[in-house]
Figure 1 (tube, rainbow, N blue to C red):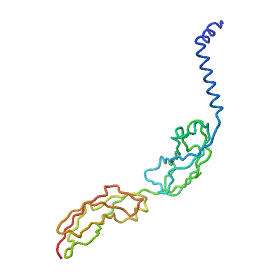
Figure 2 (figure 1 turned 90 degrees about the vertical axis):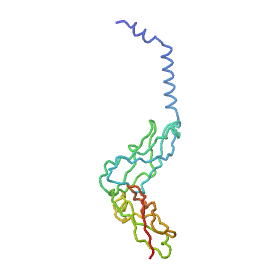
Figure 3 (figure 1 turned 180 degrees about the vertical axis):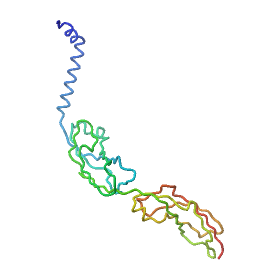
Figure 4 (figure 1 turned 60 degrees about the vertical axis):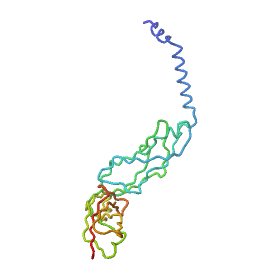
Length: 220
C-alpha cells in the first residue's frame, strides 16, 4: 500500500490548513487562558405549565439575584441579557403552598457560565383555585336629585358582570359598583354611561366593565 495519495491529500492547500490550525489553537488558548470572574445578575422568573384552573398568589416574586461565574468577557450585559429562571409548575395540581429550591436546572444560561447561588435561594408560592361568576351592578350617586325630585325608575344594562380571580376572593364579592353619578342637576329622564369597579384588586372583570344607567326622575 502506497502512502503517496495520503501525502498528496495532506499537502494540498497546506498553507491554509496550517493557518486554520494555528488560529484554532490561539482561540483555544485565549478562551482557556482568560481569567474567570463572578457577577451578580437580576434575572426574571418565568412560571410555566401552570394549570389553567390555578392562580399564583399576587406576592410571588418576579425576579431573583443570581451569582454567576464564567470568563470575564462573557459576563457582560449583552451576553447575559436572556438569562432567566424557568420554573416548571406542571407538578402543581391543587391549591396550597409550595416551596421551590432554585438550582442550575431551573436556569437558562449561556454555555460556559456556571450558576453559584440565587438570592433568595427558594421561592415560596401560594396557589389558589381560579373561579369566575356573575355579580349584579350596584349604582352609586355622588349627590341626590334636585329638591322636589326623586328617582322613580332605574335600569342598568347589563345588569350583571362576570368577574374572575382567586376562589375565596371572588366568593367575598357581592356586587360591582359604578362610578358615582351626579344627580344635582338632573330632571326627567337621563342616560349615563359609567364604568364599574371591584373592591378587591386581585379580582378582575371578564366582561367589559362599563354599563349604561337609565334613570327617570319625577316630582315628589
